[in-house]
Image (cartoon, rainbow over all chains, first blue to last red; front, side, top):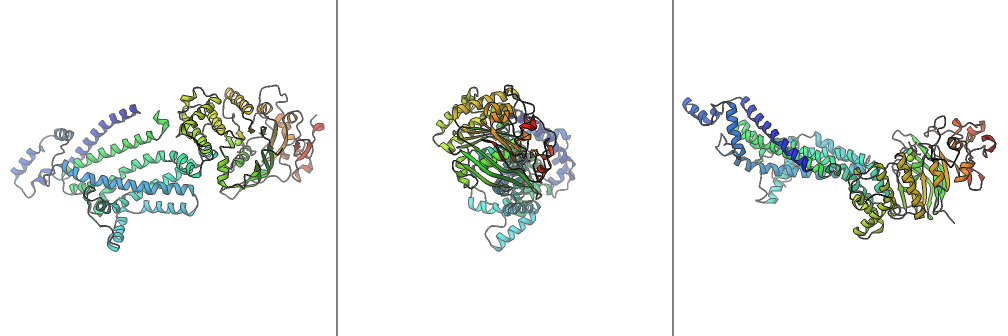
Length: 313
Length: 327
Ligand SMILES: Nc1ncnc2c1ncn2[C@@H]1O[C@H](COP(=O)(O)OP(=O)(O)OP(=O)(O)O)[C@@H](O)[C@H]1O
Ligand code: SF4
Ligand SMILES: [Mg+2]
């Protein structure tokens, strides 16, 4: 276990290095001149040249990279070309918003997907099963923007129960915060719920046929204990990894969802930065996203080992 | 004295997805007295496991139709409420399965799995249940049980897993133990060890045992009575000595073909020419007719009844007794 952890951690370093190089190189391919962006209205060649020199844009790309990565390693991502705010501060402001949204989405996905999958498997071929399958199909095939707009229409405009847009930090007022994020979290989570439901269902069906479930019944255990203890424990092992991997899709889904609900999160930050050619912000945000994604994968692997005695050694 | 378990006219049908019905078991009658051991033998697919699963109430409810009566200690298991059955299973009724490699849950330690059974039926503290579990593991000759109890199944060999399954079945001192080919999946030395164990347990526990096996040597050594199944039916039932010395059904004669002597080490059932009938459409007359060397016209017309050939010895053959034919 410790061995495995050490190996996984050692892998992370080169992965992140590669990602950072990639981000920085792709950046060079984007059209437009950062110096011009920073210059704003100013068109005086001397000023632009001075900006170029100040931000080392006149130096070779590897040198620029070296300066950038040196800053990154101590937590300095440079500053926004637009509003001169440190990128680190922007990230520190926006990341928690998206993390909250993602966490709520994954909780919603697990709370819906896993029970629905278990019920569908246990009651295979009944109305419950068909209902759950219908829900899964719906969840997978409904576009996020359409669902988002429908939810806003129903719960904000028609019923007036939830705010249509905006964000309140959890620490400020948790009720208002939950109210503001529940709809986008559902929009983000429902497709994952559908995927989890399908996998849980098929894993449960397989496990329910297994010899050890028959053994559990032969011991005289209640059906509840047979399903929730003996069957579920084995069926959910692969599902946990799947769920953690789906977290990655959350990050990309957040981009669109945050736009729909005007939530000032990471997704919105990156969209704005790209449109504004705010290179420093784009670099910082993408690198942090990659790091978050890699960390989630690591957590998924560890979780898989923790629930699987054969791997624990 | 009335038998501990008495099966009357047991029929089991599986309803397939495509609407086909498999007659896995037809009009089976069996009984086992307290402390007795019944051997159940027959070719693969003849319905031995299905019969035992019916006794345990472990057949899938949606696709299986079970009729007849299984009286255990006076009441009918087929009519009993689910809760009553659950109270019996693992407690007074226990089964060792044919598949030792896959019958233990990979996510729990063997100790947890045995303790669970004890707590379910006996209650008491976890600590005392654990002590009992260690004791059971020792009884089935698992070395250093104090340490082994905390191991997961994947660390154990097939033979060790089968011992754990046996320990688990014995956890609450069952009155009836069904052992479904407890040795088939294991190699020969392990087979002998597990068999020795079964013999010890038989002597020590006084439980009634239904032992399913392909191994006629095992039957000869362990069983008091033998029932021979063919294509879902009992074709012959007799006290063990009599079955070996004077078999009264051509199928049994065929099975015994390769081991006429009791004093030799176990051998597998002889193979008999021909195919088992398709159980979706069982033949009209004797099910063994297509393979029987003694077949007559009359055999294929109507199913032969089980007839008494001597006290306690029945055969489903219209030509029984067979003495003249065999010699
Ligand atoms: N769940 C099921 N659904 C449909 N058919 C089944 C099911 N279980 C068993 N059968 C069929 O019932 C028949 C009897 O099977 P059973 O497992 O009792 O054989 P067996 O005598 O135990 O054979 P073996 O010696 O190979 O264990 C077989 O034809 C089998 O295909
Ligand atoms: S009834 Fe006829 S076919 Fe069947 S076993 Fe007897 S002799 Fe053979
Ligand atoms: Mg079998």
